[in-house]
Length: 172
Image (tube, rainbow, N blue to C red; front, side, top):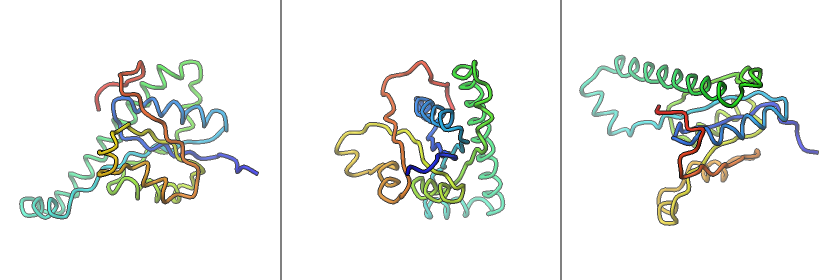
């Protein structure tokens, strides 16, 4: 028996066409009468860069700057959601109420996605991926591939279009 989908984790990189994958997440929560958590991961700075920063700025100030950046990102995601809802959900405003959390987390994207999936009790993950050439993929890897290798829950990987779409939500 297929488990009921009650909670979806939509992981976004806030790229130009990331709203394309959000459409799939919205469709999933509508069809399954589920709720959705939105996750944006801010990649952690390297230990060397942090050491350099700490040589110029106090640790408390660095923490304060991180907190401010987190708040700014959250506001941007909320603004994009409002724009998306106004455009895509004008006949179904109730769907926006299904967004039960917006999470901005510092760290390694794949690790954070896996941790949040467990922490929030998500049944599936929906995320977009950018098509990259073979050489780039071989050397750089991708967040989606790292998640797929380590997760034991369903993951929907949505290829993001390379061209601008009609649902681009403006700059971040």
